[in-house]
Amino acid sequence: MLAACGNKQATITRGESEANFVTLGTMQYQVQLSRQLNSSDTGDRALLIGIPPAARVVGPKEIWFGVWVRVTNKSGSPARSADQFKIVDTRGRSYKPVALQSVNAFAYRPGIVQSVYPTLNSVSTNTPPGGAIVLFKLPLDALDFRPLDLAFSSTLLPGRTSTVLLDV
Image 1 (cartoon, rainbow, N blue to C red):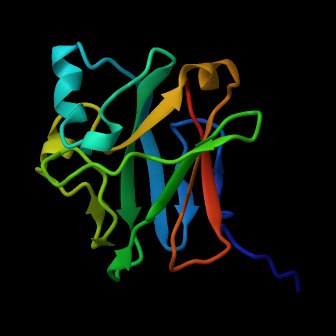
Image 2 (image 1 turned 180 degrees about the vertical axis):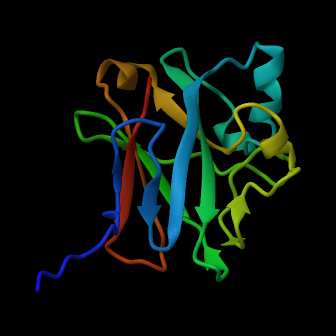
């Protein structure tokens, strides 16, 4: 008699593009979009609300860069989402996000996810690209060392990190 493992899918912890669903713990993450932001653009200004005063100045060799993330919890039990993010370039340099204040309705906030985050009918879900933004201030030359990886982890899952290759 021959026994097989069935149709169980492998757990994917490295996404080769933003379209991939990547697993961390019991949650699946998908990068909806990543792009440079322009503080002079009317549409982008709302995304930049709530930057702490010490981080507001962008030098001539720096850019704002947003990564929109969507989280799905299919476990049936509430679970905590990733609380640590960084972008890593091909030189191995890493960049931490800017912590946005609570006045930013689009900001990613780690917390308990019942089924989907951002929640249905939230500002982040109802405006393109349909995810919560993780905001970075990058040196302009980081774009010269692509591809960039978004790495994320959780303090509740020590030693486990998942990554997504960003489509920059």
